[in-house]
Amino acid sequence: MFKNCLKKIKNYRNTDPVSSQLAGEHVELSGDATKQRQMALRAVVVYPGLTSRELAKECGLDRYMLARRLPEIKEIEKGELRICKEGKKLSLTWWPRKKENTAS
Image (cartoon, rainbow, N blue to C red; front, side):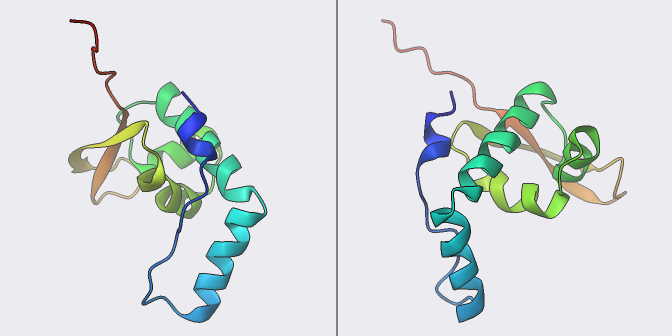
């Protein structure tokens, strides 16, 4: 389940300032991004259907880290928009991706 979290990815846009690009490369090369993706994936598996801010409260994780890492994880998917119980604004929910049935 966690194997895709281990892949190094480009986590910045070409239009980001150089300082942001360097920070993105550093967090990948240091292994911190991989660890963060693993924590984020576990949070979604344990608490499916929550917003990043709700996940942060439930798990004690930084909500900005979660907001950066959640879209990078292939094992989860975006859910419906709803009012976040923490931020009181329309927010995206996150769910474990449904496994595809490959048996015929």
